[in-house]
Image (cartoon, rainbow, N blue to C red; front, side, top):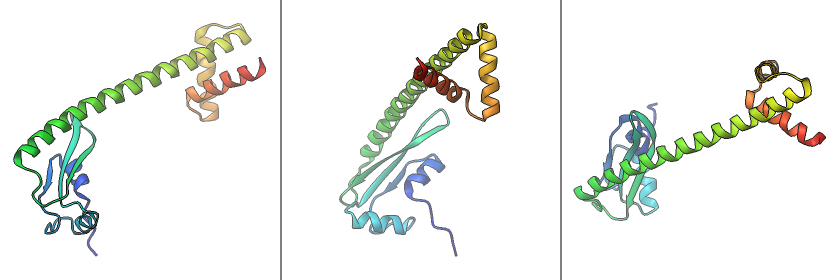
Length: 156
């Protein structure tokens, strides 16, 4: 039995190219996908890879309700939209990662402060204790810190 072909959006992602289906009623590359899409009223598809500097971010799919709905100009404009969406998505991802890093740093700093106060130790020794607890419990350092900060709030 032959493996099922990946849907067009995954082909766009893996092959780093735009997929154009002018009429899903006669498309032969993705028969199951096209049959299902046609049943739902989609007749054309443009599938653009979203990426920045060799990093795949996803795919932008545009559907039309009639065969040949997209012109060459539609493909160019869709490509520009995909480029802008990629940059925006990457910016949002970077901002979320930055905020997560700040939150992680704050939690670890709070946990270090608790340890420093409880054990009358310095910042380096407090961090080393957090690292040791992380290794012994097989939990991420930030999780150990969260638990410590949460338990400190419970005992106040």
